Image (cartoon, rainbow, N blue to C red; front, side):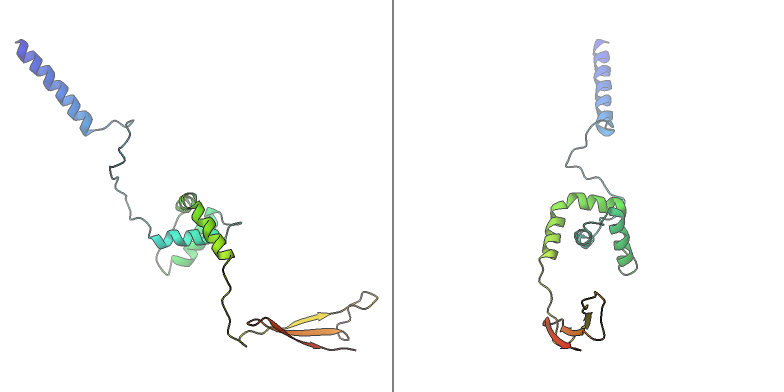
Length: 159
């Protein structure tokens, strides 16, 4: 009888330990090695790079809402990809240093060369006389800068 009672107690303890292993308590930590399945696929790497680039370009006015809206306007129809404000906030928080490097690279980038005689501009300015009234017809200066070479051809029309 005593042996049966001890065996029953050990069996009950074994069942209790099995139940604890099968259904972990909610207060326990999940081990780092366990993989928690996601409901959706993670965003591609180009999405994170584009968010980092947009934040670098919109550093002053670039809140999460503005960046998410501009990303969705640009890529929702063309690439069928949208992002939310929470995702943008997490990317910005995790990649703060990458955003700093991207902003510095954009600021320090050399301008692209423009072919000669492609873009011309016209600048008309006027001089004032001693009475501080603009006298555009008599003292007008016209300049035609070529933006590719940054040269300026000046035609002055005098009195």
